[in-house]
Length: 67
Image 1 (cartoon, rainbow, N blue to C red):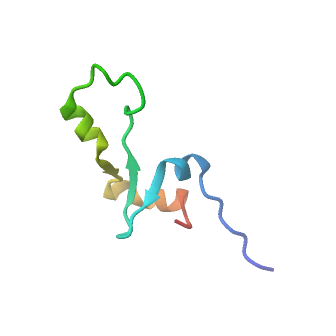
Image 2: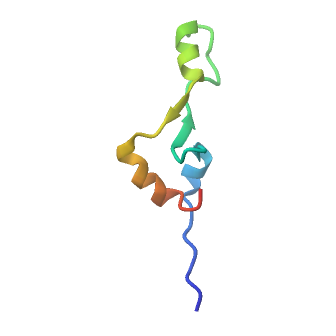
């Protein structure tokens, strides 16, 4: 009998993606509305891609086994 496939975590696959180097990355929050009072320096910081830390990478591999 064939081995069953693992399910990806549906919340994680909407929020995280794997880079070419194998790291997990995500888009930063607070960029969709109420943008008038946010400083340009803060907006520049929020534009950057966020990366999952080394300590949480193993947990991400369990959440997204096929990415």
